[in-house]
Image 1 (cartoon, one colour):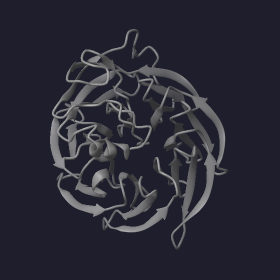
Image 2 (cartoon, rainbow, N blue to C red; image 1 turned 30 degrees about the vertical axis):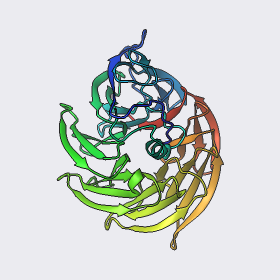
Image 3 (cartoon, helix red, strand yellow; image 1 turned 90 degrees about the horizontal axis):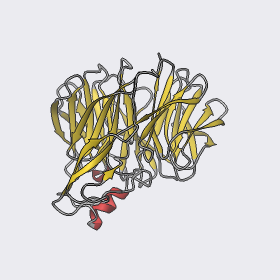
Length: 374
């Protein structure tokens, strides 16, 4: 889910500034409301959201997202150019009424760890700024409700469990977490975390927030109420996400180690490691079937693990599409949906038999996926 290829270069001390500019012919009209059970898929290169009708597994609607005008600084397109901000991640509010989409301004399909190389090689200096964007949309009509500009790349953004806040992290060497009011969209809190933070996620009970700090090889744990840092725990080499697991556990994917660290959500301590042998794309838990699923972008596969009395056992592998990335399950856990970034498809997988049943054509470079049931 969090693969990165840097697509916008900056000069030391410079800044890339953007203003919204809707594409010609783009409409997010309520004339075709999403009044069915749906999966929303973010297409990075196509700059759109494909809305899949889950009853037919077909794309029912495409929501076009705005491009942005470069107003100052120097970027890949040059001053005054139109740029695609590469929408990447998508989340849904607890009441299913709103979506939040991040537009980091870079293509994440070639490896999040590449950002570290960009910093150390001088291609992107720590004192440079690329503005990121966060869009809030109406989940039924697709209408954009709010555009939030961030002084740094926002990798993902999530609603708090009560729906009152939106949390995101800025991928910078001086990492920060931002907390916005989900109604007024005003900035409520800024929290210092580790270097190059990426995925932000809530614990199962909603009381803690976990932030994976890629360049610090750590996970920051934040009290969701007080907004205070509770602990910073050492993880593997280049962690990108701390994903909610079973029984209060958090699963941390370490790209450069090619492992999953098992983190106890009560003690905030690492309790074990699953060696993978491939760079993980995303970890997802199928709670209905007691399974852990890990996408393998380079292998075009998804690996499934089960918890045993003595640890974790690999339960099988299913071949999907090239660039396998984000994973989502239906309500009963019987069907898994996997976005394939290089193929422009979503694989529909039977969770019991680990068989791909079909592929759904979506846009170019699909990544984030979220489900909405009426």
